[in-house]
Image 1 (cartoon, rainbow, N blue to C red):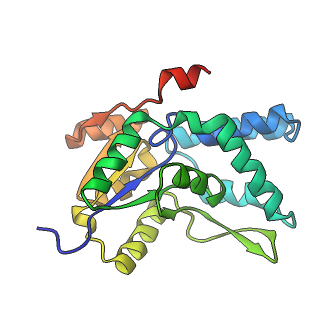
Image 2: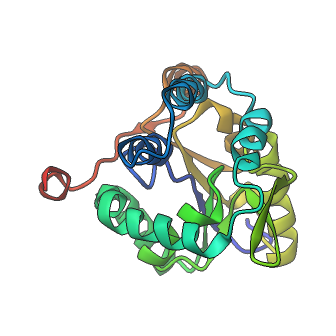
Length: 228
């Protein structure tokens, strides 16, 4: 029997969203002429490493965020929000909406738990009427980026650390709670909750799920929206 609040945590990329938002953002930056060929190739390399669980996320995040040092936060926030509504919102999976509503009816606390920053995470949360977001926090001072992130990054063991802090504040019983994710990098958090849910898994997580007897779900966005 649960001794506290039950929570449902959702990863974003390839879970709530059918697509990888990071890859989509790189494409947008490239098409907008804001990214060099070297930067594009580096981003593609990082994306491949992420997909297979090999990425040194802290090193990658540190390098990317350092490029924004000294820039104003507000214009970038507006740009990301507009891009989300134009190019990403369509990719919210039908099954994600359904499961979020199921947990809402059950009275569960719902939160996004993602390696993304708030610039993507909060537009997703608002689209789904989710009040809680645990993400990689980018350091800001006087409306400008410092070029650093606030450790721990919300990735791998960092997700567990942030979720445990959140659970303590909100009286959440993690052993009775759910986590939906696609990535092998999320195995620590999937193992931490009592109700792991594997969605659109990468190859390594698919094999691990089979070995552990976890069921695997396929979630997709509405086709009519994706085609438009």
